[in-house]
Amino acid sequence: MLARNNMLESNANNNTFLARFLRQESAGGILLIVAALIALISANTPLSEYYSLLLDTPVAIRIGSFEIAKPLLLWINDGLMAVFFFLVGLELKREILEGELSDKKNIILPGVGAVGGMLVPALIYSYFNAGDTTAMKGWAIPTATDIAFALGVLSLLGSRVPTSIKVFLTSLAIFDDIGAIIIIALFYTAKISIIALLVVFCCIILLLIINRLQVESTSLYVLIGVVMWAAMLKSGVHATLAGVILAVFIPMRSRENPEYSPLKSLESDLHSVVAYIVLPVFAFANAGISLTGLGAEQVLHPVPWGIAVGLFIGKQLGVFGLCWLAIQLRLTQLPHSINWKSLYGTAALCGIGFTMSLFIGSLAFEETAANSLFDERLGIIIGSLLSGIVGYLVLRASLSPRDLPVAAGSTEE
Image 1 (cartoon, rainbow, N blue to C red):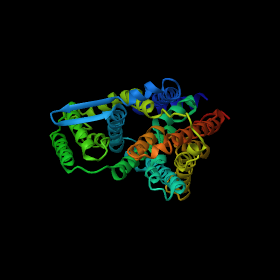
Image 2 (image 1 turned 135 degrees about the vertical axis):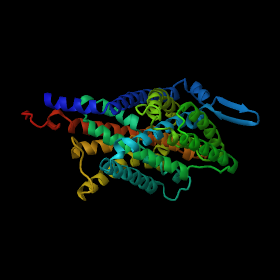
Image 3 (image 1 turned 120 degrees about the vertical axis):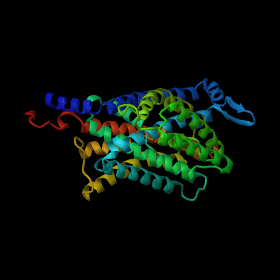
Image 4 (image 1 turned 90 degrees about the vertical axis):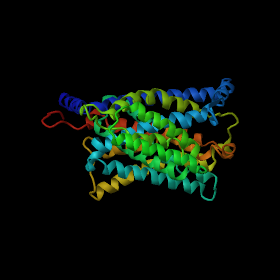
């Protein structure tokens, strides 16, 4: 046991940045659960009136003839979530340049799992809702994985969870985020404004120029990014994509001080903001489902059913199935300290869509009258809840002390 603990501590020390990231994400996941519960309580008690008034509060910014006027809910979904996607973009760039994704051997298994975890849930949802044009707008809802929530569940298992499972889950979620970015860009855009897109293009050119000039002031990048976000909001392309684009141009290394990274510094600063403010606020604003008058017609509607089954069954089948196939074809192998049981438990955790599923659901249905017929959030919460419970129970059983690998040279039986 001592040798095993020393081995895990050594791995943790060698991944200081990752360990700090995982601690923040785990705590953020627990905070997400609290925020969602508060939202559900607020929506189903006498507080519901005040909850609705808060989210419907009009907020406007005007500079001359330029105006952005939206209810508070859409400021959260379009504004705060742009900060989240900015952080996602920073993480992607760092991982690709010098992190886990810089080594091709480390990307095959989570990459394959992410593809399965997006494809199978989308097919299941489509099976439930084939022929309904409005409902089919939500096909991408069960394809998402909420890494903060999933790591929050993992944190409940304590130190028995090996670093390799956390790295696998985090890497898979990164690929999942890439898929979500592509889906939003291609399938969830409104009418396009050419003038606004030209402003976006000019911002991108300006970001490229200052990047090539090796400007290291992140404030200047962010200022241009805010202008790009506003133009993107008016363009019809979803504004959160501005965060990803901005992240591409943040310098990885300082010219004058090679040991300093503007990107890592900004990423570190944003982690706490996103984990403890942005995502919990988003969860509070979007998870408030009113259960008043909820009947069999709403519960059994194909949309929430397709989402719940897609998240709970589709994610397990997709992630675990394609990983198993890739390993059987010898394209890759199981990471150290992961067995088939723990891989299945991790695949089940990937069915926690929550934040990202809620976000895609808002894009799919916020501009239609479909919400009067069903509430896609019901399927998201049911599917995510079942996935979290099953994933936790399977991992708890598969990661019992006697199943953990013993370090070389240990005499423990």
